[in-house]
Image (tube, rainbow, N blue to C red; front, side, top):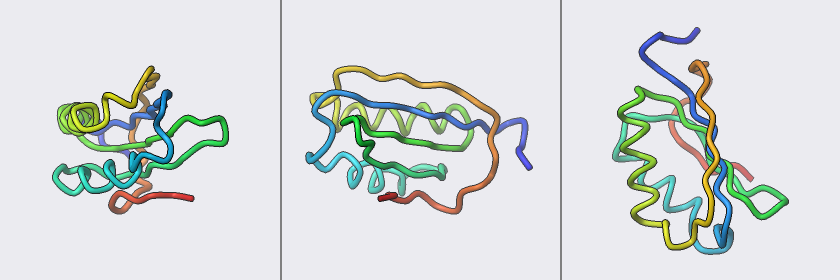
Length: 94
C-alpha cells in the first residue's frame, strides 16, 4: 500500500557507470537518507536504481549520487511512479 506523500523513482544511468563502484557508492549514500530500494547493473552497460521515499528526500539522495559519481555519468533517464512500499532498506541486486 503506497502513501500519497511517497513516490518511487526508476532511474537509469548510462556512461562509464559499471566497474567504478557506482552500486557500492549508491548503497553507502542511501544510509544517509530516508529512502529504500535497490541498485543493479544491467546487461546493456547501464545501472538501474529504484528508490522510494519522500520526493524531497529522493531528490537529495539522487543529487548526492550525482555529486559523487557524476564524472562517470553520460545520461540519466528517470520516471516517477506511486510508491509500492515493497522495499526494506537499500540493497545491491545482482
